[in-house]
Image: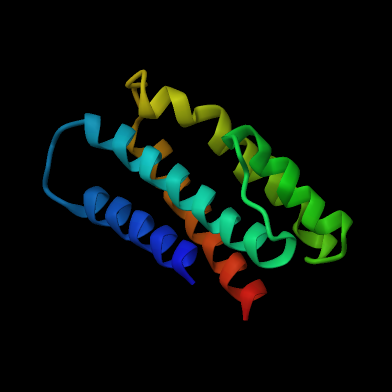
Length: 127
């Protein structure tokens, strides 16, 4: 599935950047941006598979994820991910993509872990 491949590439790129020897703090902003893109593409994989639609605007992503739950396409136990991962990703997207927000290493590492968790959950659902 194309969306999952792209999500994985965004995540792998973020991991590689975190682990490289570049001492620049600006890399943490890029890592979070890459994580956001990974989360969006993974969410697209779910909504494309089960709803046959993709968010037309990034702000639609959490709503479509919740629609998956409401329609019984994914377990309601995942509902918290809309509020813990998808919505924060959408909120921070323009800050890291366009405004060059200052992000710290611990914040970038947290985003990386949350992205891994989300992508693993999506892969499990799509099996």
